[in-house]
Image (cartoon, rainbow, N blue to C red):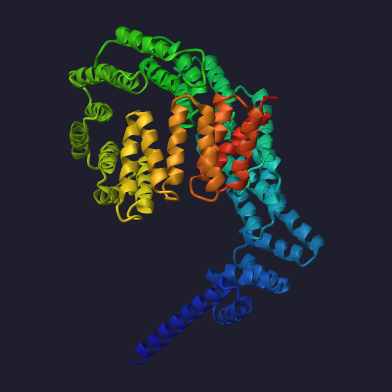
Length: 600
């Protein structure tokens, strides 16, 4: 019975000690260091343990009780004489107390035995870092590298230089790590990206610093990773011509297969720099028909050319049509050329207005043996689009529904569902459309989700505002006419809404639609006037930034009025700085101004 009682007492004592240890640690986390120290001192009187050394030691430092902290560290050194961490913390206490001479003696004693092995290097450096002693930690790494030339700590030093505010050396160390260890490229890019972003306040100074350091390294090392990083850097700054020049040089120097240039071309398509994308794809095409990227490069080149036909006088729609025909004759109709054929059908329908030929091309393409199911789905959507152009609404709905049913959880199925919802929108079935859009707003495809959101907002903001709902229904029908490129009738309908319902909430949407019509008809000045109407009357409304953006791009790309374009781009990123167009406008403004054009 007596033994049981003793065991119970020991258990209660251990429980009490553990409980107090937890309370002390919570005080330490809360910054109540004095309360934490009182409990730790009581615990040490009962039983000294290394388990709570660190929070006790750190609490003493926070209270500037350096002598007590040094005494505590000496206890640990006595208990663990071979551990240099505790020896180092004696020196840290001495340094923080102002006893620099004693601190230097302590450090000197440690460094005399220091061999620069990686393990002990990390131990010493991390101990200094725990106390925010960055220069001392850096000195440890530098000494280790001096003692052992095979050692390198570029990432660790880069982090320390960042804390010391030495951006030049930080970038230098990241580049050295990239040269030594290309597998770290993604990590290094993320760090440089963070430096360029500069907490959301991008500066040309940071970009110039990275470029300068990178070019210096490239002069010293013939390194592919450095060139790829330079391509990436130019892309971040919208210097796409320079990025392409470097990518092509890299490909030629290494006799690559063109894949990096092709990927860059696809990125340029996403950024809507179609003229530079054409150059990228031409480079890949020139590698020859045996190159596995020959067909996709041709497809992308022709697609890009159709996008810049209004701003490039080097070729016409007829030239593009001939290129399609020549390529199809050269490659033939097969499951490998389905995308080429589908794109040609789209070009025939939407650019040349040859709907009959487009329909025939797609019907023949969909019957190609061994056609991929996803390619077939894309063809069906294109076929439905053309049926809608022809006014065959029910035929279009049939094909959209087929794809939606076959690919319910796939983005292509979501695309078909959105197009089907748009047809119902044209028909005025707004309540049903909103139910479908609610589902599509959760789509994994950002583009589909955004389009669904835009259409949903258009309906919710303007439907049921007048008892007859005439305005919204007529607007939806006019949108169908716009899609079908029946521009004259669409304008008449839009104008009738403006006349019959003056001041309606759809008015700014109508002027934006009319701006698009005049742009499609190459009447750029009239398109600018329509945008100006929005800016004059709805400058604080949701479409104002888009109207200003359209004006800027027309002056920039179509009218070639650089000064006016710069003026509008600047106005956009200054007055509408939260706009989705602000970032592009700022970069385009700098490009037109001539910033960062030359590679030094």
